[in-house]
Each structure stands twice: as C-alpha cells, then as structure tokens.
Length: 221
Image (cartoon, rainbow, N blue to C red; front, side, top):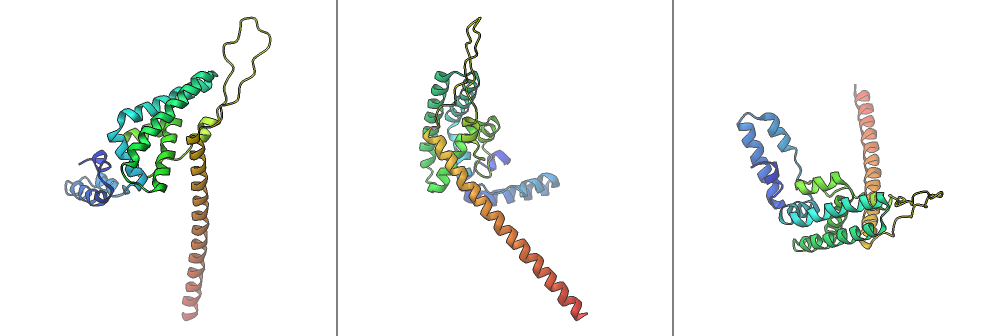
C-alpha cells in the first residue's frame, strides 16, 4: 500500500492502515519513509469525502477545474458572456459533485466544507491539483470568493483609432455558491481566531504554572 491508496480508504480504516504501513517500512529499514508515513493525519470527514470524489468523480472534477480556468481567462479578457458561461459551468460541476458528496452521508458542516473546497478548487489551480490528487487531510482553504470576485473585467475589443479607452466593467455579482463560500470562510476565520485566543490563554497559564513551580523549588532549596 502507498500514500495514495491510504487516502482512498474509509476514515475508520486510515489509522490502522497507516500504522501498518509505517511498521512495514521500518521493518524494511526504510526509516525516513516510515517516519513520514507515521506523521500522516487521518482526513477530516470533509476531506474524506473530497478524496472519495477525486476517485469516484474524476470527470466532474476535471469539468470543475476547467470551468474555473475558463472563468479566470474570461475575467482577465473582459468577456462578460464568457464569464457568465464559465460561472454556469462551475455551478453545474459543483452541483454534480455535491450530489455525489451527499450520498456519503456527511454532516451539514462537513458538506459546507466540501462546497467551499470545490469553490476553492475552481478558483485556484493549486487547489484544483490538490483535489485531483485525492490525498487531502483537511478541507481546502476557501479563497474561492475572493479569488474570483477580486478580479475585474478588463476592457477588450478596442476599435482602431478610438481616442478614448473603454472603462473596465466591474465583476458580475457573486453567485449563490460563491456567497456561501464567503460565509463559510468567515465562519472558519472566526473559529481560527477563537482557537488562537484559547491557545494564548493556555500558554499564559502554562508559563504562570512553571513560574510558580520554580518559586516553590527555590523555596524548598
């Protein structure tokens, strides 16, 4: 079994298979490889669903990333018709993949993370490549809304001899899927901020406990 096969397993089989693979590599004296495998984390539920989609729906994922590429090119070229068509293609691919994802029975939270990850895969070529690889440990970072809505349509098809430049049109309004991705990103950002605040408090408590222990040891000495 290799890394790709490992991430194709159901989540409840991942840890046992990972540890068995690490032991096998260590037995063969491939210690560096064994250590790397041992560090692999079990995928979150949403990542498990995404990894399954990479294997079960490769054509739909290829359509999604191709539509994302077409959308970026249309935005850069200032072709509104191309933007609209590409956005419809992105939405259609997302719908197909979400329907397949629902069949896996994820929670609403996990399904929302899947939807956000699909938008990320359409918006960014690197994220699309990671989705196609099918070895995710967690959902993709959700840059979808910012990456797409942050682009502006550029003026195109200027007439020869025209003295004034056409004004660049603003981007079309975000789709429902993009708005959902932005909202999900906001929720994730808030969760990260809360986690960081809790970590800061825990570290402060740890430092205080260490100081108190040091004072106690000094007094005992």
